[in-house]
Length: 290
Image (cartoon, rainbow, N blue to C red; front, side, top):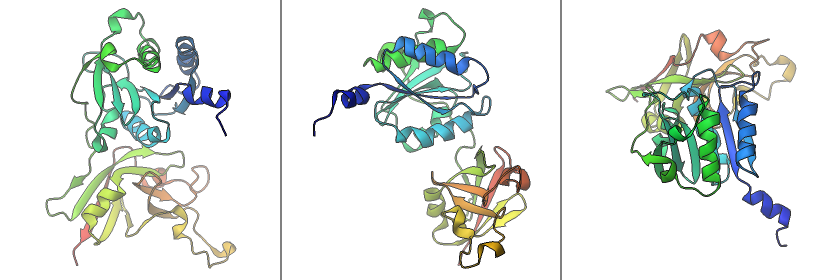
């Protein structure tokens, strides 16, 4: 069956995603969307998140790393976190795996570039042509509009070869290969704590050995693949006591997470609050040789 005109129209529509720390109380998100609609006659705007903690580059990096690849090739991703232009915080645009990213060179893209190599990377240099002090609105929207029209990166920036890294983004491995130390990089709305230890990395160090995870004074010797793995479904529901139990799990994005089963900060509490774990706190794993 041939595609209808409506279907073709949808496929050809530019997609721009927004990830910011603006929240929804003020006018910032609305202003950026209005500017995009004014610049790009037909555009699909998708909110990834506007609830990134203020200036939290690490949170933004985790969110965009785990969201971008769900979108079609050609999608343009605007990241408005810690984006004020200054000599130590320039603006960059990157093409990677068929996607475009526009943000500040403050480490946000370094998590993605740990696993993938950019196809093209430029430092944006169109600022002298733009008047304004709201870079996401004044600069990033202009770059997104240029790219949506088929424009190339070299027109809006000069080629660079490296991205500013985020410190502590890579887990530390002990000299004897028997210890792995990671850090908390995200705390979700359930108060679960996500570390920077990926399942593939964990298994490459583990090599089938027994282990013990230490998060503050809490210990775990098993990592589950689902939250409900801790439930014994052979026991009648009225006799179970699993809600609020702590566990370690590899989450849907493949990161080691310290969680509580069916956590709720208003009732049973959550891992971050009850275990005293905050952003960038360390989580240690000790491996035992046979």
